[in-house]
Image (tube, rainbow, N blue to C red; front, top):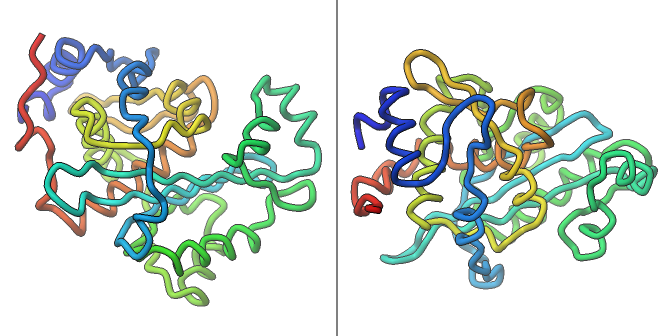
Amino acid sequence: MVEAKNTTRAYSRFVNLHCNVWVQQAERWIDLAVWDECSTAVDLQALEGRPCYAGLDLASRIDLTAFVLLFPPDKPGEVWQVVPHFWLPEEGLREKAMRDQVPYLDWVRDGYLHTTDGDITDYAFVRSKIADLGARYQIQAIGFDNWNATQIAQELQDHEGFRMEEVRQGYRTLNAPSKELMCLIMARRIAHGGNPILRWMADSAVVRTDENANIAPNKKKSRSKIDGIVALIMALGQAMSKDEDKFSVYETEPLLVL
């Protein structure tokens, strides 16, 4: 596994042979069939008061904003649990759904997508909802992409008391948590509750790879939005920096054998 994590050819061979996922720039990163096997329901009430880590990815103010909570295992045999939240401006949503050919209205109806008043995302509303989540769960740190997020990150830190950690969107910061997320998925050690927005993003996600086998999400090459996956990776990165004894799953879990 060490070799598979540290060389491009070995990493691709390991994932291709053992996990049925092709790691190439032009290919999907996540095998949706395996992702769907991680759809175990998440009990939100049982998670109240539990420590967790978060990732915040703000797109333009007319596009999806993603905030993802990640709860580490609390006892032997428990899996990592994912609780995603998404926002879009309400005005023009029907037209956007038709233009993008994405079922935003269905997601709003089913409670997976939240809307803010007006034709741009109301970051004050998003901030208040994150504050509400902070009162419900013990959010240890929030990793965030600084693009478009400087003001809300400062307000979340200064006014709400959150520990905000800027995460640059490069190999140095995203490689390790991206690979760790893949390991958790392949080991079926993560539960996302079957959230359809996160599933859509997982199906779209593509990674870029450098000559040293480092990987990072590639928004430009991905077919659709992947902000929720990026937020999940940032949350996992925060957990990895604070809770190193839980990594990597392949140091404690057997490899998959065909």
